[in-house]
Length: 396
Ligand SMILES: *Cc1c(COP(=O)(O)O)cnc(C)c1O
Image (cartoon, rainbow, N blue to C red):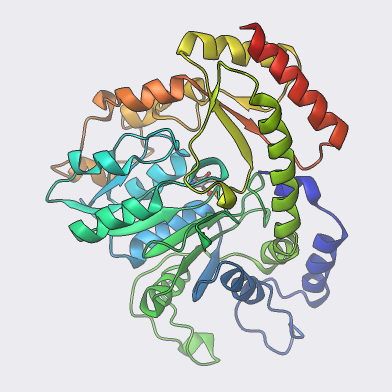
């Protein structure tokens, strides 16, 4: 997820436009800004790029999730079905909104398994929040069918999957709202930033108001704008939006390079009989930020991860032991460790997160290794990496 690998003159030029005017605020200052609207331009270009009607750019992916939950009316005590393999931000956004995360099993797509969602549905369930992990997709069509059938809101965390699609339709555009992150390690970056997208004008209006203290952004005098809801401040600055604007123009070339590198490696690894690849419901829509594969069991997977690291094949993640991305190491969630009393402690449906039992997900994550695909690799380097990996994996 390498936006940070390609920072260059284009980013500097966009930032300089902002520095020259001194207008760092995304709203107003029409005279002084001399035609530069970086956040607004990003929103327009990104919406066009992923073929969605509305995009609101905000301060982070976590903010995007928070805004989308508010706009979709998901709050205190509402149960939301989530996968145990995600970044903790997905769970934090829910908890901070007063909602109740309910974990359901993943399958070999490394995303929510649509076929078992009904096992965790209750009368309090309001939404399903699939996370399209590591640049590829959940079985989003089946998940959407499940949501429609049960009258649930579908909201997508596509923070790691900018530029990915399923059967030609961008991830993040299947549900009522989709969320993206442009933090420094995502596919493209604003430095810090995020976006919510939707085809529903009303949801968009609530989202942009909520992100800016409830301002309705009608008229040209900020002091006279109406406020129909209590909001917060999740605004992005023009400096960050400017960086994103430059990066967005590079998205297609980033995807092309990642896909080429991934293809070389995947082709090389097809001779390794011990491994199988992550299931990708639409391989053409994979943004190819990662190459994920499975070994036969946990023991062999740990051994493979160790050997790959020893051989200098860097960027191979064994998420099962990782503090960030899998529930197994989230002791702060299991112990409900918060800085202050969280709303969930007032809910009569607060689960005991120390007892969440997800044997299928454990089994899948215990056998998975995901390797980061880098833009900066040269052709020779990719070939050599492939050869090294084959040697290691065939030696097991
Ligand atoms: C990065 C990420 C987020 C949060 O994005 P930030 O911009 O870092 O707040 C949320 N969900 C997933 C799956 C992510 O990878």
